[in-house]
Length: 339
Image (cartoon, rainbow, N blue to C red):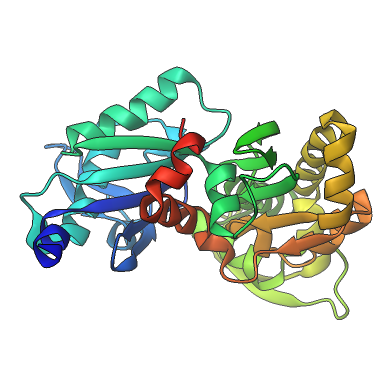
């Protein structure tokens, strides 16, 4: 009966991110981590690629192919394409269980409106889910990082994703204070792209800006400043061009986004009750999400707030989906954290 039950049950946790979607399957672990990107034909509107395959086409597509990021700022911007993307990802992970309607736990930004939450729920239901449960991203991240969310003690999470930065103080299975800031990884990439266009008359693509961010980007001064060649198109001559860019000016390009994240953290700290402030002073803040891996960001927050600051030691990128996994594994224990 146990084997029979495992074969016919199917429970999935989804971190539906602006930049990447991660999928956990109960009993198998995290089985999918792919870009939240869809490619389709313009003439027929038929989806031709999803995930990593679609991202490879980005910036190289012809007039007959449209590349779409169906999520913007952590929420659904294109309902139809999002459904196609979720359906494709679920099809990849279900394999021999195509006839089983899965139970799904999905993480959404803490600042999502009821309309946005309903859009996520409806998208999952339309691709065949038998149950859909929503959890706020900072709560899922806290659970994934093993923080004591049920206890009468404050835990502070800063989840810097692709589209949103979620700052939250959690205690007794709920969010005591939180703020969703629509400035995160993609805004940093855009800042670099705009800087290169404005300062150097060089047009670069989204992937080029992201590559610069990870190679020489930082939030604080580096012990040894670095540089790298950047390729793009000269806006004056209209020809391909390569130039050397250093980490000092990329840090300046990122300074606006970093300042907004720090300001959001300070606003949440200012609003929290004194009792929880004492807990955060002792326990510190925990960073997760792809944006948390920007060099020097932890040190910058430490300097700006004078609070102990840590980065998720296991894997900052998977904190949210690990939380979804734990909710599925101990569903009755975590039922009260669901939205």
